[in-house]
Image 1 (cartoon, rainbow, N blue to C red):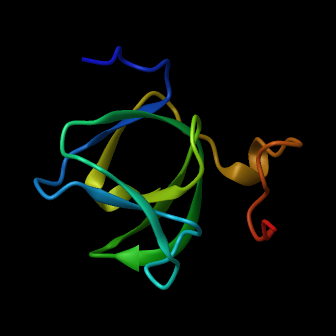
Image 2 (image 1 turned 120 degrees about the vertical axis):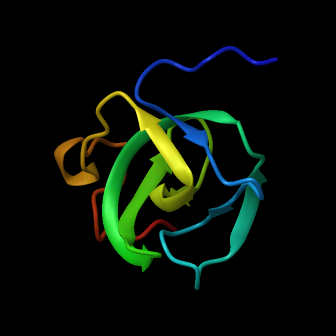
Length: 97
């Protein structure tokens, strides 16, 4: 089994896993999935589409894509993307590509 990523990281808590999306919205294309129990590094978060009362979405650290916080429990402090913007992390509202 893969080792636990450094903090902050998230653990997929949905029994059905979670879709990884190109942008933080269910209108965005699915570019992958993470099965239940997967631990994945989190780069930063934004407020976007509300999913069952939770409007936080996480930008993944080690691969492209976003996951809704509704189905991912975080460990460690995940900063807002606007507070961590660098050349490799788009700020909230920036579009990629």
